[in-house]
Structure formats: structure tokens, C-alpha cells
Amino acid sequence: MTDFTKTRAAFHLPEGVTYLDGNSLGPMPVGAADRVARMMTEEWSQMLITGWNRAGWYRQPRDVGDRIARLIGADAGQVVMGDTLTIKLFQALSAALALRPDRRVILSDGGNFPSDLYVAEGVARATGATLRVVAPEDVAQAIDDELAVLMLTEVDYRTGRRHDMAGLTAMAHAAGALTVWDLAHSAGAVDVDLAGADADFAVGCTYKYLNGGPGAPAFIWVRPELADAAQPILQGWMGHESPFAFDPSYAPARGIERMRVGTPPVIAMAALDAALDVWDGVAMADLRARSIELTEAFIAGVEAACPDLVLHSPRDPAMRGSQVGFCHPQAYAVMQALIANGVIGDFRAPDVLRFGFAPLYNGLDDVARAVDVLARILREGSWDRPEYHRRAEVT
Ligand SMILES: *Cc1c(COP(=O)(O)O)cnc(C)c1O
Image (cartoon, rainbow, N blue to C red):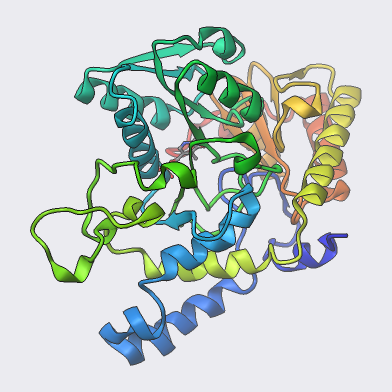
């Protein structure tokens, strides 16, 4: 059994704060500051350039990738770290599209995160492909034999709706297409099984449920059977088969290493590595069970206490990730009032109150407090103050 008391104690959570926004930015792991400090004082300052070998900086994108692999149903040697999710998504999508040269359609859904759709738009423009965007519930019926790549985010960032990764991947394969899965709201939140789902490409960020810190590097996975065939379009020197030969022309490294681009963010990787320590001993099935317990309790509590709110997430937990959204016409101000009262969730335009439940550190006490505070704010109408309507630059 996973000991969630222990994982909870592994995070700095400010006194008096109920943090339900780990789906935007996970809290700081207790071990992260020391790890980064050690990287600076023992590695960078003492080893200088030799740190690339002596401290393992060069291997780190693979070593850290191996630690993430277990959390997403992949094997060691199949994941590398680096860049941001947007860039890794570009790497995956462009490589997938190039593996289906006779086809030119990319299919995604309108609930996908804007950056993903922007990248697909850009890739489509650059390659003469067409981006087809349908409603999330219409994806299955939009799969046809023109399709080159099905590009989806498994868990919708606004609604928390979870696609059936295995089912849709099987349909895409039957139609002759490849799949690219974005795990931004899945990795560390739900029980992802890339191998079991027979997926082709997957990418994700590490600053949400994996708690790697703001700007933490992204990851990319390619199904092993495709890893030596997939051609990266961003052909960086660190994805070359022998980077230190400084060969003027590109030859891809073997396997997933070819998806590396340039110099990895070593300082950020140290914080992420410390964050991954917390996952040792966490069973993903326990994580999923706890996540469902928390989101079910929150939905039941809010629906009992807040008649003005309308559930914006699937009611069936099997169809849901680890977050819950509720709609309110003044959601922005309501969320600002919640934050002022120590319950941190976030607002997503136009009218969604979004609450992320991270099983590593959220418990039923957080659910109870969030429901209480939300019910009181709505009952008293105390959200309707000028300061809560004022928009910040980043919401
Ligand atoms: C958070 C998120 C991103 C952000 O991408 P970055 O390059 O890390 O800024 C992209 N796509 C999805 C689906 C996300 O949830």
C-alpha cells in the first residue's frame, strides 16, 4: 500500500493554504532546494565543464526519463527529457506525420490546449497537411482512412474529461494512422499505460502533477518499434548519433535519444530529480484510487452545498482525470475570493472554476475545507467585491 502520509510530508505546503492547483504548478518538494544547491556548490562550482561526465549531466535526460517511464507505463530507455512540452509536441507530431507520407490529415479535438492546436496548425501549414478539429466526443467517428495522425491530450485541461487512450489508439491503427498523446494532465495524475494502450508517441510536462518546478523540462516517449524509424524535424546536435564528432551533417542517434535537441537544463533537472524521489514507493493503482476518492467526495460535497454551481466535468470517474471543474457566471471573481480565503484553485475562461486533486499531497481534509469555503463565499455573496473582479496578468 502506498503511504500517502509520507508523500504529503515530502512537500512544502504553506500554512493555512489548501492547494488545489497542482495541475498548473505542483508545490515544492522538501528535497528540491537542497538538491539544486548541491548541484550548484558541489557540481557546477567544483567540476566546471567536467560535470557533463563526472556529475552525469549529459546522461541526465535519459536517467530522469527512466524514472518517468515507470509512471506512464513505459520501460527504461524509452523516455528522454528536455525543452518544453510545446517543443516536444512539435517533435512528436512532425515525426509522426513524416511516418505517414501518403496521408495529410491531423485530427485533434477542440478541448485541446491552445499550444497543442497552435503547433498542429503550424506543422500543417509547413507540411501542406490539414488540421481537423472536432468536439472531444466526436473524435472516434472522425477517424477515417485519410488520417495520418491522431493528436490528443488524454485529459482535457478544462473539463478533466479523459479520452479512452487504448480504444482510440486501436481505432487510429485500424485506419492506418499513428497517435500522439499529450500527458500534461495525466502523468502523475492517473494510471497511464502507454505500452498497454499500444500508443505511438507521447509527450508531457513535469511541472504539473510531477512537481518539477516552474519551467521544469518536458518528456517524450516513442514506441520502441518506431523509435529508430521516427525522424526528428528539430535535428539538434544532442540528438546526433555522435554529438562530439561535430559532423556537419546530421545522423540521428539510436532510439529515443534522437529526440533530444540541445543542451539540457541541468539546474532545472536537479529539482525535477528530487521531485521524482517522492514517487518511489507510489503504486499508480493506489494513486488512481485515491484520486477518484478525492474527486468523488468533492463533487458530492459541492453539489450538496453549492446549488449555484454546475458540474463541468464528467460525472463518471472512469471518464475523468484528477481534476474537477464547476461553472459559475462570475467564476473569475469567485476564484479570487477563494484564493483570498486560502483555497487555491484556478479560473479557466470563460466561466470555469477548476480544482486539481493531487493524490500525493491532497487529502479529504482539503476537500472538506474547499467545499466549506466555497459554500460560504457563495452563500454570503462575498465574492462580489471590486478587488475580486480585477484581472491579473496571469490568471
Ligand atoms: C500545460 C500544457 C501545455 C504547456 O506547454 P509548455 O510548453 O510547457 O508551456 C501544453 N499542452 C497541454 C495540454 C498542457 O496542459
